[in-house]
Structures are given as C-alpha cells and as structure tokens.
Length: 165
Ligand code: DHK
Image 1 (cartoon, rainbow, N blue to C red):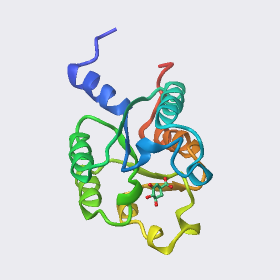
Image 2 (image 1 turned 45 degrees about the vertical axis):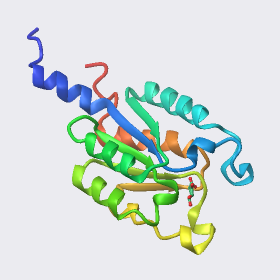
Image 3 (image 1 turned 135 degrees about the vertical axis):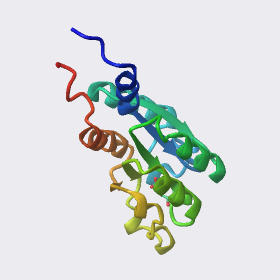
C-alpha cells in the first residue's frame, strides 16, 4: 500500500486535535461556589476530557486562562492546528467581542460549554456574545457538559470514524 502523502498526515493530526479552552476563575473549580459549579476541580475536568477524547479517537489541548488576550491568542493559534474548539468562556461569555471575533476568524466548529444553566441565573449572565460563533451550546449539565461537547465535536469533525479503515 502507498504511504499517505505528507499533507494528509498533517491533515489527519489537525483533524483529531480539539482545543478545550477555559476562561477566568475556572482554575478555582472544586472550591468555587460548589453549590453551583460542583466539587470537581479543573484537573478533574481535564482528566474527564482526556478520557472522553481517547474513547472518541480525539486528542485534546486543554488550557485555562484568566486573561482575555491570552485566550484570544490561543484561539488564533488553532487555525491550521486544531479541528475544533470547545470553550467555556466563563466571565468573558457576555462581554468579549474579542473572543467572539477570534472564534469567527479561525472558522472552526465551536462548542460553547457552561457548567451551570446560565439561562436560569442572573440576567447579566444570559446573553452570550460567544454563541454567535458557536455551532452548539451546552449549559447546565455540570462538568459532564465537556464530555458531551467532545462527543458532539467527534460527530462534527469525524473523530474515530475511520479508525478501522
Ligand atoms: C462560568 C463562569 O465563570 C460564569 O462567569 C458564567 C460559567 C457561567 C459556567 O456555568 O460554567 O456566568
């Protein structure tokens, strides 16, 4: 059998990499308002995502930042490098035109995740700017929403569909 051309090896790598980005204060999961956000830490969420990704034939690049510009730069770097972006923009959800613009600029499938159901919370949390760039939104299912987002992403980008090929 012929070896695949180099570019298809690159495509295949990019095809399987999903960026999972977390916004401000999510580094405090576990101790932060546990009655709302639960007791899982960000490390627990990363492990959950890694397990889900492995089952789905995806790789993840899991990161958290408290800084808007850093999140914008990471999103920009996804172009040509990742197949999709799962993002919990946290406190930047309702304010960040810059994160919205970066997501629109890279043109990748985006799944927006919120641990809580933002629509049942204060009004100021309910209008997401980021949703304008999202393929889908998951809210209110706790940290399990991240695994569900990866499942949806596998359907969108192919995941392990040709593992047996
Ligand atoms: C997380 C936050 O930090 C809040 O700023 C959002 C979101 C809700 C969440 O549910 O994951 O309002």
